[in-house]
Image (cartoon, rainbow, N blue to C red; front, side):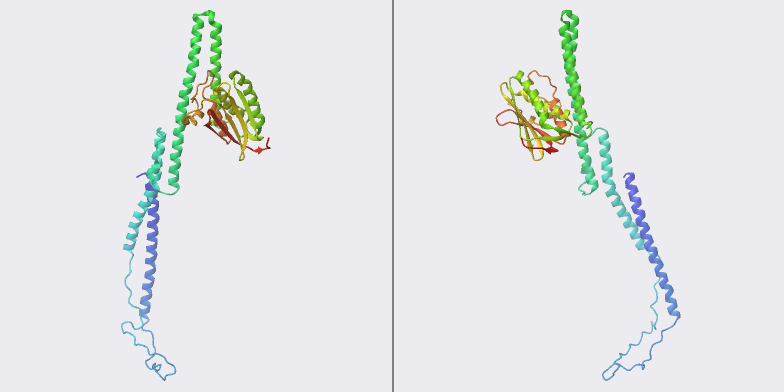
Length: 388
């Protein structure tokens, strides 16, 4: 048993013992007062009573109709019965003390057991073991301590997922940085061995350096979004104007991919947030669609009102994704489709999801019925201005 058990046990036991003894003493004090009254009554002698002929007998024809009193018993003679000797109530006090001891032990164990289970769970988590289940030790209780155990298990699971994500992210970053660094080292070696190719080697080094720089920038953006480091969003962003800018840039880029971009909108909306973050989030999805749609096909971008939310749909005519991968594409460094030689580190859609969720919205992906991928972004609109 831990210290908490003995503290609870001692407090409850002392409180009950004090109560039991105080009640016993009060009862004991009250009885001697009655014993002192008995000798006074005995010393006073028998009480006077009416003579036998003081009242006519009870019977018919008697107008007073007073009953005849039974003669008193000689052993009483108008006195109280003899008092029994009364001492301190040891037996009730002893029984109460034993009951208090049992009750205090039971209650102390009942209160301290879940706390000790939580203490062991905290110790396991501190050692890196996140697979803890204090609710199994707490049992089928339905009180605040049981809820605390369940909340702790949920927190441990969240911490485990966070630690796993951090380890995976560190591994993926190391892998992504290793490749451009290796190419830079190779370019340096070629420049030393073949001075006539120094210019080409310098261009390669510059290109790989730019890739590392973009990777670091995207990692910092993702870290700030996860840490909620951008503060409160107090800017009203005109989403129609913002999406039209993205569509204009996408149409310019689509000529190199031999595809088209179509845009439709049935509303205008204002969203409270950061314009540069929203621009980057939506642009990542649009560029992903341009990268994976087949040549000669069309990327569709739509802006729609949806029960107080602004819904932005981006659809491509590419190969689509396996159903099991539809949620995983929003994780960092997860790729399921060939990037056709384009740059990208699998962070774009992760930034998109984090940005949309930071603004109070949601994002999901689904395969289109006739092929291709559809990504839907929903944002809470502060104002749905008018239908277009």
